Image: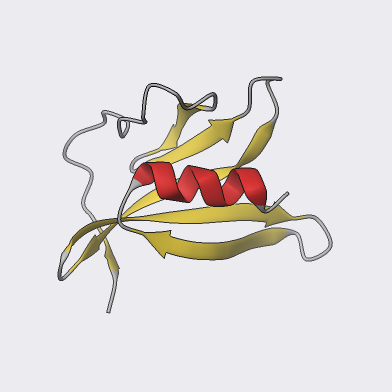
Length: 87
């Protein structure tokens, strides 16, 4: 079972230096993923898991007026990559 972490530190996850996308804080433990053109391509949510910290890739779905979870990943880079290629 996955649970949301209590916000203790507001620092954003570190992405690999080669990553073109950037993170902008949206809420505690939630960041907007911004592409090089300045568009929001999704959200990255930090979660607590029995094995450690996980990152959930989320994308807004206009037809349902809500967010869809694309997957949970062990690294922020993998979650951002999922958002990049799932467009």
